[in-house]
Image (cartoon, rainbow, N blue to C red; front, side):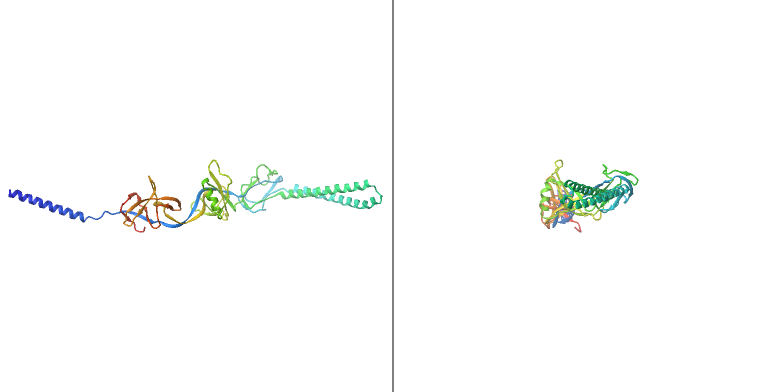
Length: 368
């Protein structure tokens, strides 16, 4: 009995000691580390209110050049694709037929003027004779009528001379606008027709130039509202990598909404002095309506989307994560404008959200 009792006491003692040792190890265990996250503070900023669209560049003026007189093209004065100024020679049509026609018209004018001069002298001479009854009234009236006929013929001759001179001028085809030439469809040596159905050349005005784009009809009221307060700025961004935005102004709102697409067509005018914009080019367009002052913004990567809408993880003072529903008004550049749900100064998680849950401990990465 004494031996069994001693064994029992020893077993109890070992059990007590083992339990005490286990308790000591639990109290001394290191704390569970928080999830590493990157954070950023919600800020108050001035953010532009913009509309984005895809636009197309169009020339303000496009002229199809046609010859106004026919003949042989004797000389081309430009190279295709070359910029030209208003009045520059484009091509020459053989002027000799028109020079001859001008000389004929001038000769006829001189003849009729000489006859008119003689008729006027007769009328002046017979005016005194008819008063003395040396000639009949009928003779005098015939002389007056002849003078008037010759005067009308001289005027017709003057018009014929002006028309012949104009045709001679038309033999030199000149640019009607400042712009850039396209393909010439009539080479030197070819015969060109007056006012042919197809133009011999197309010239596009390059500066200033239009960018045409459309926005949903729901934005029309806002566009008109802010345009009434002052000119609206438009930026055209070519799609080529590294392209810079080209500034312009909104100058046109269409007078009707496109029923098939539910959009309204707008046009921006751009000086295009550097020729960054080219007719027919597609590009991105930003129309700035106004700049909202002091709105709450966070980096767009902080905003997550869940079953119940958009949310962010806010870091509380005790370094735990709070899942906070937010309403995003819009995005601009790399930030999102928060309409409700956040205040300036609150810290939000920008990286590491996948490891978080409401109340989770976090460890903020250095440098954030």
